[in-house]
Length: 136
Image 1 (cartoon, rainbow, N blue to C red):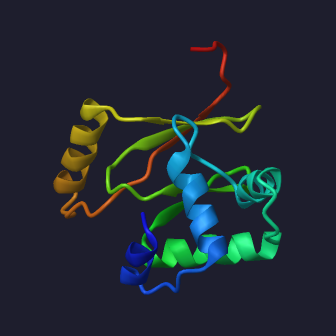
Image 2 (cartoon, helix red, strand yellow):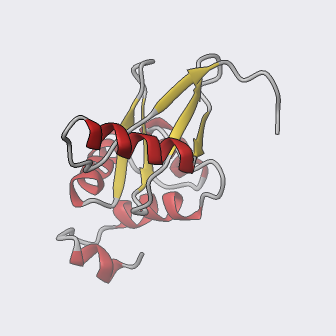
């Protein structure tokens, strides 16, 4: 996403916004980050951005629809780019690792449950908590 695209979301183009967006966009598999994770990555890059600024920018990104904030039971909020797709999450209660998954059977069943109960499904969130017992 470029500076001009940030403007489309009604956000002023600033260096902290661009740097934080760059971090979120370049992540591959593990793209669930806490504000503290983003802050540490900025420090490692030699950027002088405060933690409060990171929180503020992530909140602005969330309000603009650029990122999604996920709040888990362990009182940790993580952020991920909002790609518009629907996926669910597995959370390891020991390590805090978050893994995405998509299951067509679960998706279909959720739609059926909503319909059976007279609901029009707008969105859903499924988080499975467990303890990771093996590595991929």
